Structures are given as structure tokens and as C-alpha cells.
Image 1 (cartoon, rainbow, N blue to C red):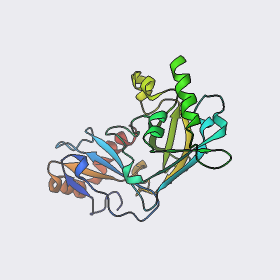
Image 2: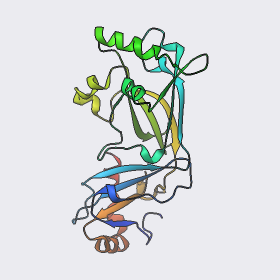
Image 3: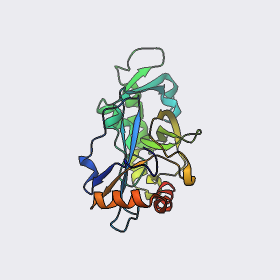
Length: 234
């Protein structure tokens, strides 16, 4: 599918949550869902969805994001299905997740740098003692960003404070704040070919009258270039 073609993917306007991505072909894929108004404006909701035919694997030193003595003795191990990574509506990021809670809920695993699991929970016990003295901890989140090659990438981001501290400050919940990028993965997405200076992923359009919008796009696709450029700048 390319801009100006006759096979736009347009859905009736409804909650994005009912939309299911096609079965994945690549390790990590993304689709951009965009709500288009009856006036043909891309000023409504948007959402990035992820899928893939293999899990996202993480194995990195805890000292990369946690400011705690002895953190270099531990590693964070995490395996996540792409379809279970939830990017929030009208943002390119997930909610912030508290590192201590991720460990407590066994969503992630802590391993010793020398090998084997931290079965004694030494790291968490030490972290709990520090939290009682000062807000010590870490917050993690997922983000979809622009890769250096101009395409998309999935990022695991971190801040060296507990998630409760982050959530209490609205500025830290924004997409474009300074963060620690712990790891990145390339995302496969169908993108515009640059005609009309239009870049970024080709969106799946949601509208009240899908056939009406399809007709408008087929008759005058160039008129929608400014709308999609405005959306991509968000």
C-alpha cells in the first residue's frame, strides 16, 4: 500500500481496542491507528499497536538504571510478547512500571552477574531498606521512537527513581523527556515512500463513514498530505 493507491485500509470509527493486527511475519511489527473526522482531519485519537512472531528478550545489568550499591552484581532478565506491550492512546509510550513491583510480581527475573537466580532476593531486600531512607528505585517503560535510519524502533526506557515519584510529576509522564534508553529493537512497519515529503508509517484509518473517506482519498489523495504530516509531527 502506498499513498494514492486504491487499497487504503479504513475501518469504521470505534474503540481501537477491538482492532486486531494481522498475524505477524516479522520479529517485531507496528501499526499506527488514526481517527479521521468527518471533515477529513487527522486531529482525533491515534494509537500505536505492536505484534511480532518472537518475544522481546532483555538481559542487562541492573546498574544501568538502578542507583544502588552492589547493583553491578545483578542482571535484569525479561521476556515479553510484543502483542502484550501496551502503548497508550495519543502517546508513543506505555505506563511507567516500578522495578520493585515487576520483580515482586515475577514479571522480570533477577540473576546474579556470576550466574544463577537471586533466589535469596538479596537485591530487593537491600532496595527495600534504601527506600525507607530515601526514594530509591527505578521506573521502566516501553516506547516507540524514530531510529537513526529513519524507521521505527522499540525502546526500553528507564528513570532512576520509583514509579510513584515519576507518576506524581506530570512532566515525567510525557513522551519526549530525557530518559535512559536501555535497549532498542528494530520495528518493521509499512511506511510512506517519501512522495510529497510524506514519511512515517502508513496509518490504519478509523472514521464514521469509511466508504465516504475512501472515495475522497481515491479522488484527491494529495489533499491529505498536510493532515498526515501534521499527525507524524505529533
